[in-house]
Length: 285
Image (cartoon, rainbow, N blue to C red):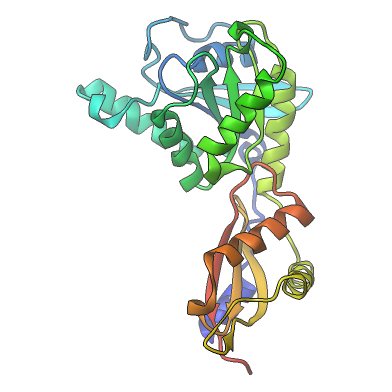
């Protein structure tokens, strides 16, 4: 019961200093996906050398900038290589810095090279951001080099949804760091997903949704016992995290957890951010 009370009374983070108001954005992706070119495009100056040789940028470089969309810190990371190919101390250091940059960031821009398609390495890199609970945006770079026919964009979008099925919440933008295509839209989307990751729901709002959701689709049952969701509460942001107090964890099915998450997104947005839902068993009082 003490743990229950702590969950219910746990304050959402409120203290923020000036640095916290600056949106920290990590540019992540495999070598030669265009991270440094995009960083230069966002910043408007050549802070680090751009090369066609994969992995030229070995370290994470922070640059602060202000524009009409807000205040940002752009973290340009070294390309994330396959672990089997990290065979020097410098490469190991770069990998650690890249993963540290993801941890420091509020928003991850996951760069994909349009002309190369999606590789296993791309899905692993995206998984780092997802598992870290970071708001994320897929940026399909070098879109200017793609031979476009009717339906090309939608085919690419469909393929991304299939390959990144665990991150369907993340918006997809088709950009060109070289020409600046849709870079303005990228800034707007960064602000959107950051704000969504900080979104707070009152306990009343959450429980109204749970009542409606369970009325539309009854909870699972097994051997005559039905799952009961007594109530829920939000316990954290960045990413939004919720605790549901239920009668028996064994009665909760993965598909119903996904249904609850989908209802949260349908009613409250949460675009671009993971949602974490935890279960706590509680006897009915």
